[in-house]
Amino acid sequence: MELYHQHFGEGKPMIILHGLFGMSDNWVALAKRYAEDYSVHVIDQRNHGRSQWHDVFNYAAMVDDVLEFMESHQMESAVFLGHSMGGKVSMQFALDNPEKVEKLIVADISADAYNHTHDTFIEAMLSIEVEKYDKRSEVSKAMKEKIEDERIRQFLMKNLHWKDRSTMGWKANLKVIHENLHEVFRAMDAPMPFPKPTLFVRGGNSLYIRDKHIPRIKKLFSMASIETIEGASHWLHAEKPDEFYHLTMKFLRD
Image 1 (spheres, rainbow, N blue to C red):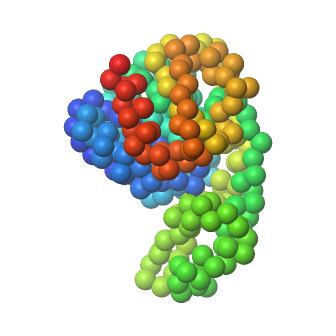
Image 2: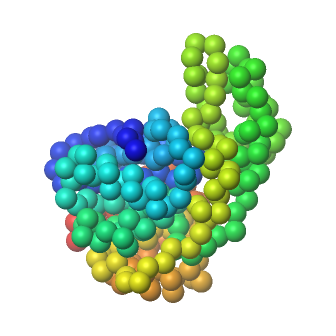
Image 3: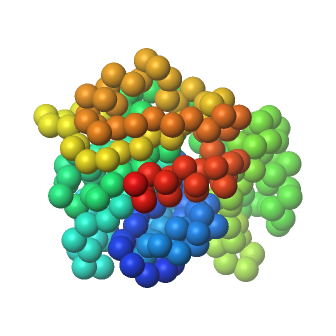
């Protein structure tokens, strides 16, 4: 599958993978900073952003997409940075293809399975017939009635776009994502651990990497280190971009 991506800089390749309902646009500011040292490719994963939609939506397929992307761009290996769902894609890619990953950065997700509440968000988005609205503000108002948390609502609203001059729609393939949420939140596993430097960065206010998640991380990533950005939530790279950048660049330069 051909994936939409944005490219910045020159040098050794770096691949950035966004989280569920995210897109490459969310990472442009940080990608431009990494581009001072790397050739940075920020990818829209299948069923997200400006990449193609497909009925198959699981980690095996997303890993194959990245492998195909690397082959088409003649990359032997790359540094990987993935957030949330993108972190799990990066983890699975590294476990399956360790020779193609120089170093791995995983932002606020572990290798464990998770319970999820995202059905509520998707059902809220699907329940709004966005084609009937003329203004984004009207959709935002309708969303507010269904999703009270402003931060989550504004994040999801980034998926709204104009399909043509008069009709709005969602960028994400909500139906297929909804049907496959169990795949997104499943645990990672592998017969052999990834044997190269790996950094897990967690938000101090997030519940996605807790002490109970560390055993599986250590089992699957033998050179894993874990750092915490205090005062940050799950969207740590957006809330504390300077701290996130300096912490990850220190890891990459060591």
